[in-house]
Image (tube, rainbow, N blue to C red):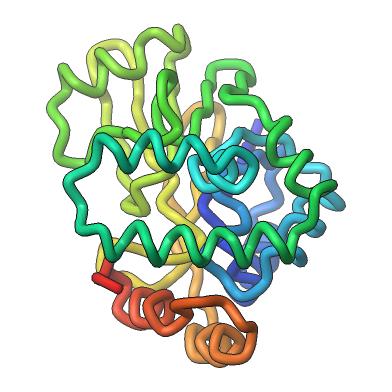
Length: 239
């Protein structure tokens, strides 16, 4: 069986359309989403509605949780050493996205589960215990095993960090999907993950980054230039 996991779309309709075209080529039997659907992009409403129309099952991401329950952001901020300017920008962007989505879509995000299991695979957004904290690609085998072995599946998949990888760890495989939008690895292309009979591979998909940057410029999202800089560079930036 072939399963696709599409994560961290972040309101980027241009990138999602390109991924959907690629999915028509790879023809998975089943598609899951890994959360972080709407925030930080030009088209949050269109993304949530499209994912719902497609019927993809998935998990709640930290920005989905933030939109539905703003107090979860404040809890994370209280433990963070990042500059206050980042959190101010994130709050303003979240408020605009929340207003655009409306309560019914927010309630749907709130109801997303934290874990999805299918055959040998377990899917979470970041880690089993947190939507906000996850190991990096440079994490040791011991850390990856400690975090994901409680899922009790031979294949553990997560998103959140926007940097894809596949690692064999002890008696399991840990893989990161990468992100449809806002890549952090220097490669501007969208990323998603395919499982062929429990063997994961990463797909990278070209999309029209400049088209999405133009959409951001007119969508009314606060700090859209910050998002545009990250899309253009394929790396995280300061606001």
